[in-house]
Image 1 (cartoon, each protein chain N blue to C red):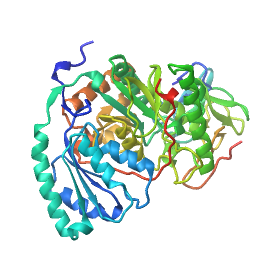
Image 2 (image 1 turned 45 degrees about the vertical axis):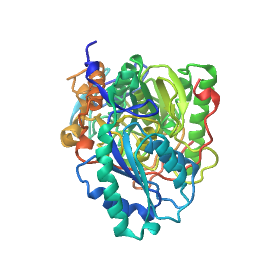
Image 3 (image 1 turned 30 degrees about the vertical axis):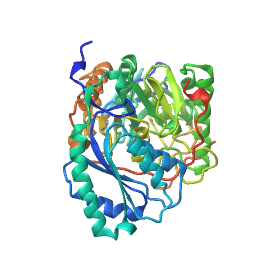
Image 4 (image 1 turned 180 degrees about the horizontal axis):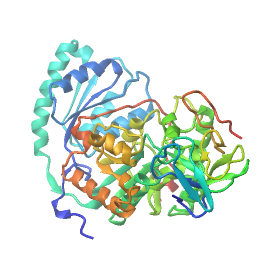
Length: 95
Length: 402
């Protein structure tokens, strides 16, 4: 689902298992890994440094090029404010 | 809109004019050394409305002092037993006098003076037995929606929180404010990035400046602390950044104008929507502003909240001493797994089984039922979490409550 017209990410409405398919615009995406409810995927190609838009507002920036349909999370985006702490002590660097 | 029958609501009238939706006895320890004795006293009254609170520190602290004075005179509280060791620095005399002036039965027990654990427990049990009778005589009067003060926190958030439970609570908050109640939202640390949008909703330009300053203070504070208000479970649940969590959290506040800015323990002086600034003033000194969800809940209660809405996606079970906590579960899978702990299933919005407006009205109705005496899930499960630590605050300025 798309929360706001301006968003460049979509939110997964129910859990996804590998092999599930989804059509975004004219692209067919086949998921290669499981995704939990609420996770984000790219609604279009997002270039490194571009803002990630959700709820119609920037929620951080891409740290690498993200292809359409890819999972958007800690590995390819970062906060523009305070870094995100995870249990395996991986920090996503700020700025 | 015929959501409820107002004339059914009753409240316990206190001397300051405020009305409670519960009539409980509080046992409060004034230093950690008196905690065990206090707990033993409460255990004599299992299943009865006796709630244990306290401050563990032996060093004095203005914030903790104000919190304890506010909590012991909360409208849901009918009587108070204070338990002191004797040598701690908590200002027990002032607290005792505050409670006495509020018209509530109060007793102060000093463990050193009385002569130890056993004798203090015996004295405490005796006082509470008689206090339980005394509070039955508190006048019961009509309670209207404008008498209500409702707080909201989120905890154990995931990516569904910002889509279901938080906007649904926002709808309930709009209904409350429309009908003249007081609603408090908090955690400026989770509004980082939203200071412009939020401050534009202030009722006066001077208040807008204060709102913006409070979020800037939070950004600075958390940056020095090295962590945002973001836990690993948030990321597993699909949230990636603090801004994303913040935007989802912000929906809890609904769309009403913001009438004021308060700090923990300040009582809103009029009706409407209030932001609570929970981030200490000055340089970081005593640690994180919100070490856990319970500390945020108790700050809302200290500002007069009769009940606290708690939105959760991952699934929290906590309740609170003094005021009922109402769980609004964002994630339909979590609801299924933890149904006994959840009052409202907002996750059904994702399954197209209800609209945001419908769940907003359901939350509003639930608040009214809880005010009427129905127990929330955490309340009936016996949850009475309480935590109070050290903080430093400057008093709010005149533009905060215009």
